[in-house]
Structures are given as C-alpha cells and as structure tokens.
Length: 510
Figure 1: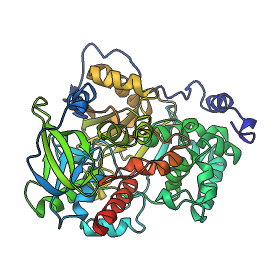
Figure 2: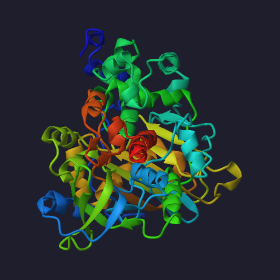
Figure 3: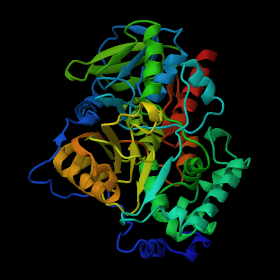
C-alpha cells in the first residue's frame, strides 16, 4: 500500500463503513451458501449461461488432439461469437467470413430472454460511451441508444425507512468523489481506450489499486462499501484488487448518462448477427467449439473445431485470417506453435465467476430506480429493473422482472458451486435478501419464478498491472489476430469494439 494510502488501512476503511451502517457489515460475501427453503414458493427455471462440457473437454485433452484434413477454406474465420467477434464479422461483411461460436446462440454475455412481454438481460446490461468511434458503429447497426431516464440508481442500506445515504450523511463525501472523477475525465490523462494511446500519468494509475488511489485522494472510507459493490459487479473484484486505471475508467460513469436497450446489450449482438447473416447464409455456426488454431506466415491458418454435441468428431477449416475473439485465458490454450511467454501471460489472468438471477413478479410493480445497490448484502451486489428502460406508458401494470447480479468474491469457489448446479441453494439467499433490501418489490406482487444464469468465467478481473500486461501481449501471430475485450483489460462493450476495429484495420490493410 502506498504511503498516501497508509493513512487509512483497508481494515480501518471497512470498520468505518460498518460503523456508519450499524450491524450490516460490508463484506459482500457473494453469494452465500444457505440452504434452500423446504417448500419453494416460486418456480426455478432451467439454467442458462455457460455450457461447461465442451470447454472442459478441450481443457482435459482435446486441445492436444491432431487436426484432421481441412474441409473448407475461407477468407476470415472468427473464433467466438461474442460482442467482439460479431463486431469483426459485421465490419467485414463483404468478405467470405465464418463465425464459430460454441454456444447455441451468439452474443457471449450479451444475451437476453423474455418473460411474458418483458425482455431481460442475462449479463451485459448497458453502455456508457457514445463518443467516436462508438456512436458511428451503432449508427451502422441502425441502433439509437436511449439514456436511462431518472432516477437512474440508488444505494440501499437494508434498514427500514432509511433513504439513500448519498442524499444524506454521505452527500459531501459523494460530491467529493464525483468532483475527482469529473476532473480526471476532463483531463488529457484520463485512463481511457484504446490503452495503446494512454499517457504516462494514466499508465501510472495501473500500478495502483483503485482503493489505494482513492484513499490517496482523500476519498472518505464510508463510500467504499458502495465502491466495492460496484467493482465486484462491473469488474469482478473489490476495489483493493482492481487497477486504478480500470476503476477510474468505469467509475467515471457516475457523472454521465448511461444508455440501455430492453433486454440489455443483447440488442447490439442481435443487430450485428442480423447484419452478418444478411450478407450470406451460414456465416454464423453455433455449437462449434474450437479446440486448436495453427497460425501460418503467408499461407492459411488452420482451425480445429467440433460440434459441441459430438466432441469425438473433430473438423478443420483453413482461413487466410483467423481472428480469436475469445477470452485470453482460453485463447492461450488453443493457440499452437506461438511464443510460450505470450500464451503464459494470457492463461495466467484471473477470471471472475458470476450468477445472475432474473426474478419474475406477478402483481402491480413498484416504481423502481434502474439500478439498486445493496450495501452490505451477502448474496448480491445490485438489481436492475428490466422495465425501467421502457417509457412509462409502455411499462406493464401487473408484472415485472428484476435482474439481480451476484458476483462471487472467490471465483474458484463460485465456479465449483455453479458447476454443481444447485439452483435452489443459490437462489434462496438472494430472494431472502431481496425482501430485506427491496421490500417494496414484494409489497403488492408475488415472486413466481427465478431464472438463473451462470457465468463460470465471466470476464478477466482487472487487477493492478492489467493494462501493462495487455499492452505487452502480442495481438498478432502471423495471420492469427486477437480481438477480445480482454485486450483492453476492461470488460466493456467499448473494449470489444476497440479490439474489433483494430483487427479489421489489419485485415483490410492486408
């Protein structure tokens, strides 16, 4: 910890917040392991999210299997149909492009489902930056992002009758935080994207944790419960485990509007998929798990893959360009014959694990803020109203959906619990604490179904040093390019677009 930050230790900061919130505590031990209720009063939907089996098959041996003879040759093969991969393919729609996506549908964490007439997000929910090149990119997709109408968010203490502390006892401290972030945002040294253009002062932030930086700037300890909840939800770890570069970049949104579509960022993924498919049938192949990529110099890269339902039947294609739009921890395992130091840097990154619970209610819904932060909750960080993005006149009067985000503080333990798949044990503590923190949700309505989504490797944790690491990792291996949000060190839609644009520029230059 730096000498500036030594004035208040991490333990002292937490103790200070605990005193402000009474007996709540701020550990955010997410999610808890309480037993499910004996008689479940609501339906538990089937799992959505990650398909573990094909990726574990690759991990456990298929990544070393030989490639069969190629059956097809294309100009560009994109490995991964998340936001970055779809962006690459949509920007290269005039080429012979194929997207290989392991899941039954493209989108990565930007997917949605529907309950009755309400679209809800399974993961990625909103965007924040409409500057260039992002606004131009959305224009090409025919999308017009709308700002979330006020009130946008609130902080909840779980104490009956107690309002948002930012409007009361935390007002001065929160104003100081906003002023600091405003000054940084307006500075030429703001820690932005692309990270390749970062100034030396911005890069210096990457060597600090967000906690150390904010304490060095005299941000009050009482705010760190809220900041930790935000960092866990957005970046996969609390403030003392997050790079100040990434943390400041993300936190700066508190001074700006955020933009959301019904169902979250799945709207962006669907628009890109439609653009790709409109340029030619069969360009997006789902259920296709890539297990090996062999780069080439001046020739064709070879890509080995298999149908997720038939892992014993490997296939192969050749591509003038292969774009790996998959998380780095996985890309490093399937790239063959490249610099071991580069793949070691990729596979050493930590990955957060995540549970999302979409809670479906029947009955008159209360008027909720778009995002509600639960200070001191043990089972979740925040909850988004799926209908708050709709104009007031279009919101249902007799049903609603609440999207609850529950990142695991210990990602390895979280992955084990998600793989075990005990939905009742995972849902019960979330529902119990929702009754405490958002009691108005249950006032005139009844929870009828909880739909759980599991993300075992949700995104790379933006730990201190992440920007330096990503700047040092090569993005090109012969005719194989990396294009994933990991490349910017921050799990954001904007990161995916920046990485896609960079890969497309290289391909178009030839």
